[in-house]
Image: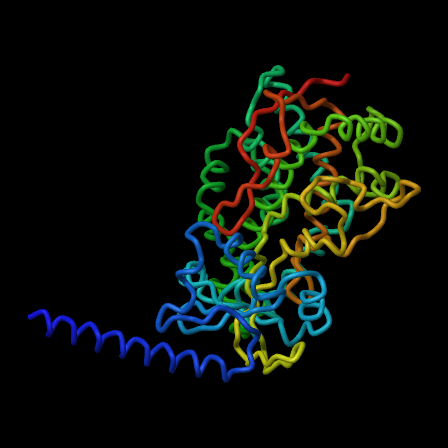
Length: 433
């Protein structure tokens, strides 16, 4: 019996070694970037800690460099780190890296529809249509700016009803940002107490039933069917609501941690805008400190550290490696936002990253919150308008006070799934006038 057990164990070890060495040999012959040797069937999945995708990929970067390969099952994933690699792919070779990579948890629901998760002619048609529709609805024009100003004024009124109590700002910031999208999609906003609006925030599916009239844009084009329209609108709500509201929440938290930065913003707002009119986007060019703070909030909060997966549209030769057509690529935006070649102290919040010696705003390559290249976020212009007007109007009217003394650890982003979120906090809004 013991001998039989020993022979079975030995045979199992020999078979396992043979399978592993064969897999390893096949893997090594491919000219993909280096990386950990994958196990049969599961690949490198066991090396990715549950709920710590970013941390796990960053640890592998330390061992294998700024471009490496991991396997999720039998599929290779090329991971890109740092500004130079991401610029060299998404920007310099944008077309070759313009495909959308696989995301099983999302793909089973989206099924390749909409603007964010589609590919080929469907993606090109949806992107072109979305950009045209957003421009027609007023993106980049006074009309959409006035809608944002109006919504920001409702936020101010909502804050005043709280009577200087410590509150969690999440609810009304999400509602305000979602209302901007509602005004674009539906042509009007909702009262915050509206039951339908509350259902909309939790079940975006309620939006889709009202979109049938738009589906006749191009009735003969199969890419403009009801399913694509529903998913494109869902993309607008999800991307346009969660990312902007999360960034604003993080911004308020950061400004409570650094009251000296908040005070400098108050001074600039008072000097450029005063207290009797709404801020507008033309003011931004005269407010270099606010501009720098907003850029630094987006860099530091790093809402989508993993970006959204790309895939190659043809065989690509990059830095001596061969990346076959259809290979998924993960450009880690967090490694751009924390690139030590672009920043003196990547882990510290510092608006000086976007200011020159004279206090004028300067661009910095470490800023890439909207991704880059052909898959760059179509709502970038709208998001920037919202962030500037919302934050400026809040600071125009209030001073932010924390419930407790905050530390640098308190303001560090908290990884939740594939996104970074601000840690829970409560804030007191103290009227300035």
